[in-house]
Length: 354
Figure 1: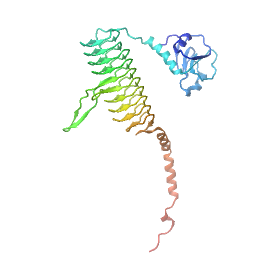
Figure 2 (figure 1 turned 30 degrees about the vertical axis):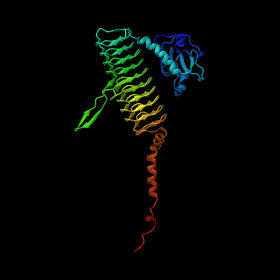
Figure 3 (figure 1 turned 90 degrees about the vertical axis):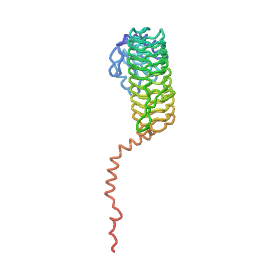
Figure 4 (figure 1 turned 180 degrees about the vertical axis):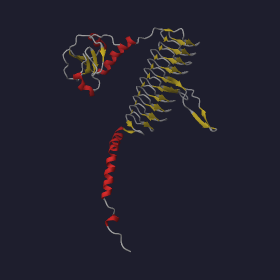
């Protein structure tokens, strides 16, 4: 699916400071890993652990770090860059634009736009979309079967994939990417036990996503009981994440797949939450904290902390305990042998005669 790229075009895309070492005269016809690349391919060194694989790579052009000091093979070119992985991302953006071009502005004949809704003339509204009364859609792309609730808003340059559902009164910021099947503004999970039954507590707030937020496929974000469930600018949320009512997520956070965040919890800016971690309700996770995958967070986390385990504990403590845990079988064996070789005081002398 990769179009041919000349060296001149590659350099134009990556821009910035770079140094060329070696030479390659042909065009780039594909992108591959260091191991799988063949002649005519582009590859990159993003993780230092793969540094030794560069010398055996058959890629014709490699994006490498500025401090990479090895010599390319004949007919091979190294492009030294500050951040090879990000430079490759820029190239992939260019490929993406040609493979998945932005749909033309306009409203598909099968779309239903309720009375009082406002849709920008620059918006692209796909087949079988529904836009509720009073909703406002900017110069955004709504692919097929997208539903926008009453009085909800969608900001300019946002892209909503098929089967995205945005609930009533929710607000989607600018340049958001909502992937297939995600649900924004589902009813918050709230009940009070009264008269021997669980009585539903109406959730009358909304969800607000600020600018440059990405939300993965089949992720659900609940509307607030009152006020707003809020996702901060620049935050990236993976697939199948559950964010409960009245949660507040800071700016530029990373939340990986299958994370669950319970109601009224607050995440500061730059928090990273690994896959399948769970965070209990009414907690505060400080800015810059990192929560490892599978961790159960049941108390507040200080800013900048790194935690892991069930329940969450400092990362270094968890690692030490993991090392000691592996030694337990041998320790018990040694203790058992020691116990057998020792005699109790009663065994050392005969009991006194009466």
